[in-house]
Length: 141
Image 1 (cartoon, rainbow, N blue to C red):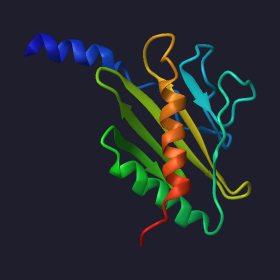
Image 2: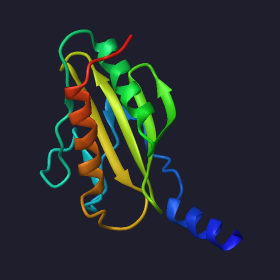
Image 3: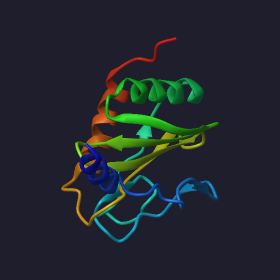
């Protein structure tokens, strides 16, 4: 059991220290293709933010409910208008971030692998799953 725990811990990687909000922006993606962000200018990394109508706080609470229901997601850090989550696959941990933009009526997203070069599209696919659920479900009080 000790060897398996060590292997799984190695696959999880270290939590990056550069995450968070810097000048109202999420961290820049590395040059590797295993990161997506709605604030990146290049197509390789760019993904659309979560758009919403109505009250911004209700939309952000709705996102938090969706994330809390997912069995692969753990909320690690929460501040007003910001969430940082760990997103787990069988062996790996990715870092996700969500930033509320009241002016643009959007929630910016960023998801990045901790390890490796390519994620075979996992971060993009997972953010699109979250987008579909966000757009197809209604907030609950």
